[in-house]
Length: 231
Image (tube, rainbow, N blue to C red; front, side, top):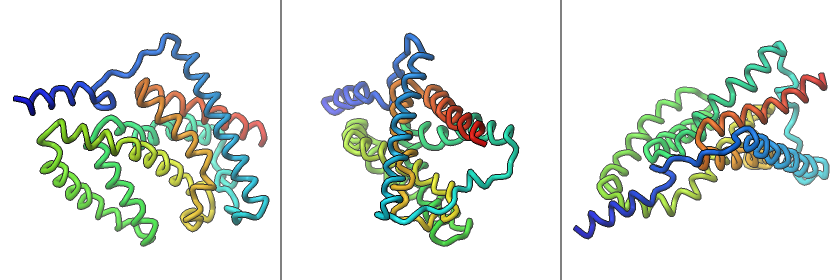
């Protein structure tokens, strides 16, 4: 009986898994404020990366593939403002409130790492195996007790939250010609994406996935407008 009561208390105490995100009184004002934070964080982080490169403390990342893309302005706009926010938020932020989704995400990241290391897409075939092993471990250790699940996730979640932001940042190494070869300093070149990823994660956890998607789109819209205006 005591264990059942503890399980109920743990279940009610899992805000990141069962609670409804806060409802913003003025959604657009909230989005513009968060977008301003994203711009300040992204620009500041980009300036820091640039200073490190210019001072010779780290090697240059090479040319940006974004500047070399030959797609039309319309295709670039829709890719950056519509498709990228939808796809990236679904992959990196949607699963933040789902334990099983976290297991799938970790398996997916391991698959990406193996693809990068082996330089073959066949390495992705190991992802289902990793997911199966992790899910079996979860099923026979944590799933049977909400209390154990809550205690474990409470300790792990802050690390996992930052892990998803780092993974989001490192994926953007694909924006550079050298790509994966920029590791292990890759996170320095993608500091802007890391900063943005943390803010997007905050928006997703506190207000819901639709807010992180909208914020991502709004941020990309501002950058896209600057790039198109520059060209």
